[in-house]
Image 1 (spheres, helix red, strand yellow):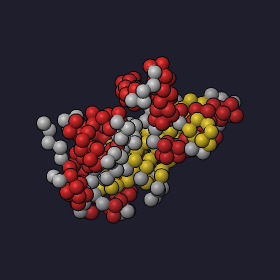
Image 2 (cartoon, one colour; image 1 turned 90 degrees about the horizontal axis):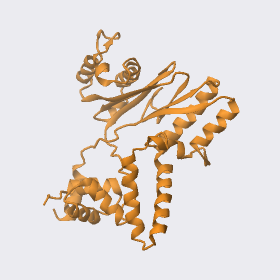
Image 3 (cartoon, rainbow, N blue to C red; image 1 turned 60 degrees about the vertical axis):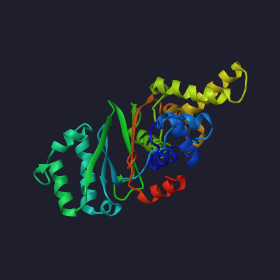
Image 4 (tube, rainbow, N blue to C red; image 1 turned 90 degrees about the vertical axis):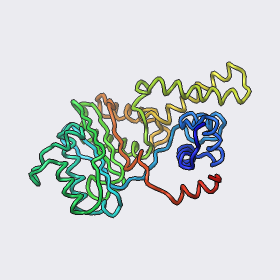
Length: 308
């Protein structure tokens, strides 16, 4: 049997919101399989979230840059928030977004990009900055989106400098409509994305395997209620609709007018401007998502409570 460690219990607890002892039991029942343990908790009604919560831990900054019909977003990590406030670091992050646009969002190409400011590659510039500031840093990720006609609208949340902050969003709108009006709509949708963190653009883009997985979870929950099979089927359909409203951008309730869905707002604006508007893509980078900071004291606390 897999040894269930305090770190495993802590990870499951953070991703589900379930109690510590319930998390340990779930891991024991699933022989330490984290994904199966999440499902076990959800089937028992002990997990509050439909998906794992990202562990925000790394420091650094996110930056966006738009030029013409293209936009790029990039994340550069540092060890401490103190370095993120350093002007040299901030300049590098801002330049990284520009380089990301020129490199189609490919980090490998960004690293070999010749930087005219210093006459070195962008990776060598990072190495020099690490040596000068005395803290480890990394060019973690980048992405680029574009439209053939329309706008790519940027938004930075918790900005510490122009186009630099903790959350960076890009929204792509294809349309022949007035660009100023499109840009305004795009910015509002980007603000919505920053707040609501959708996973998919539209229903068609949802992974069928993810839908099937959710259905199996909902079916187990419905069966536990003792309802007839035909009622269970309707309950599952209703939960899937709710799932779409939680994770699909077009189906989400618009933060500026919760009585409308995002797709309704786009349709209304298209009618107002007299031109079709198609939401073709979005990118959302939140600083540190998926990374975990060392928290020895809390891990020790968990271990002591579990008697490890």
